Image (tube, rainbow, N blue to C red; front, side):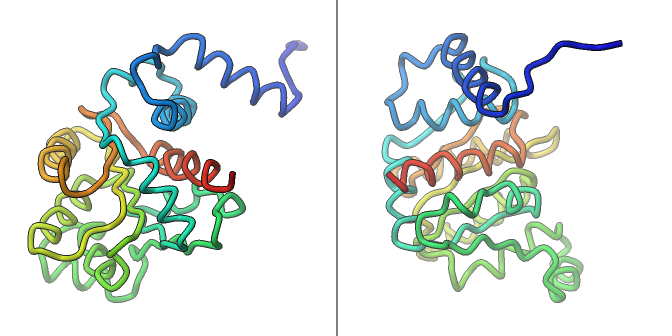
Length: 211
């Protein structure tokens, strides 16, 4: 059986984003935030997420400037790190994930926590002014917020999109509460999220940073 389907990559790309902008209500979002929202929708296929996006007004501009200045991108999972398009980064920014660090598993066992949460301990030397992308583990976001509450110098921006049924909604709620006036952030309320969305947010601002 032969199926007629669109094969041209450029046409697929253009049609996808045209469909998103036609079907999603972006009217209440500033242009730079809407650009990120479009990428988030493209990553998950759900136009209704717009109403659940929570953000600081300066999240896009803060992320762009940080990337231009060479800030590293700290990721909670390899899937997030692999989703970041390195060729789009404006300053050959490092994309880092410590989950496979040889000391991470023993530390997680010692602390009685997840691998992803333990990996946050390795972020400390590069956390100040960094771009943080969380797309998998709520425990990463919880631990990051604990560290920030200690008074550690904060990252430039937090893209917090952990997904799941245990802790995801709560960690994002805490992010919005704790960082609203302290650290630029973007998140998606509720259980939805994912690594593709976290990397999509980074890719969106990285593309704008090249302009």
